[in-house]
Amino acid sequence: MKKTASRLAFLAILSCVSAACGDVAVKSGDAIAFLGDSITQQGNNGPGGYIHLVIDGLKAAGVEARPIAAGISGHKSNNMLARVDKDVIAKQPQWMTLSCGVNDVWHGANGVPLDAYMTNITALVDKVDAAGIKVVVLTATMITEDPAAANNVKLAPYNDFLRQLAKERGYPLADLSADMHDGVKQGARFTSDGVHMAFAGNKMMASGILRAFGVSEDAIAASNVRWDDLPGTTRLAVPLSERQRKALAEKAAAGQKSVEAFAQEKILGE
Image (cartoon, rainbow, N blue to C red; front, side, top):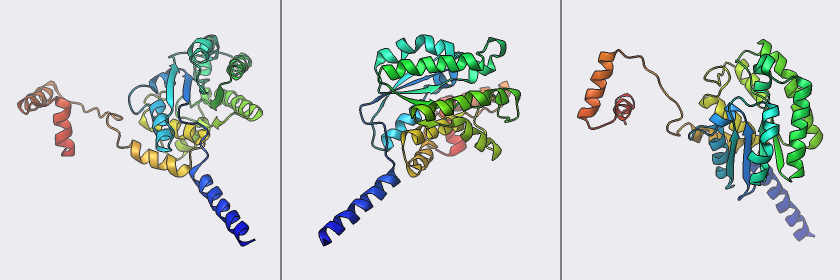
C-alpha cells in the first residue's frame, strides 16, 4: 500500500514537472514548412528572422527540427493554394505553419474578399490534412500598428475565421494578431514599416509559434533573453556628413579594421 502511494506521488510529481516544461508537439527529426508571404520570406533572413528563432527555441527545448522556408513576397491565399503542393506537400514535412491574410486585405481591390479567402484557406488545409501534415494556424499580424486603422478593422473577420478553423479542426493556434494588439496597447512596436517585422516582431512571432507547439512559458522567456545577444539582429543608422564618413573610414583603415568593426569597437568598447 505504501509502495503504491509512493509511486502515485512520484507520478504526480513527474506530471507537474512535465506540465511546467511543456509538452512539445514537435519531435526531433521533424521538418516544419513555414508557408506565408513576405513576412515569412523575411523571417528566413539572418539569425533574427522568426523562422530561425523558432528552430532555435525548439533546440533549446531539446527538439532538433528542420525548417522549410515557403514564404513569397506579395502572396495571398489564392497564390498559396496554387503552390502548396509544390512548396509544402512535395517536401513531406511533418508540420506546416500557415501565415496568410495580410495581403488579402492590404492589397485592396487586388486583394481577396473574405468569402473567397475562406474558400481558399479551407481548400489549402484540406490538401495539407490529406497529406498527413499537421497544421499550425497563425492569425494575421497588423497592417500598420494602429488598431483602429481601416485595414485592421477589415482584417478582424479574417482572423476570426482562422480562430474558428483552428478550433473546429483541432489545429494548434498561434494568435499573433492578439499578441501584437496587446503589445501595441502597452507601447511596444514590432515592425520596420508598419507591416514587416523588426527584430521585436520576429521575437513576438517566434514566441507565439513556440507557445502553439507547447514550449513552456519559462523556456520561451529564456529564449527571448538569449536572442537579444544574437549578433546582426539590429542595425543602427547614424547620419554622417561625407567628411565624417571619410574620416571614419581612414581611422578604420589605419587600424586594419572594417568601418563596422571600428565603429562597434568605439561605441561598445569591444
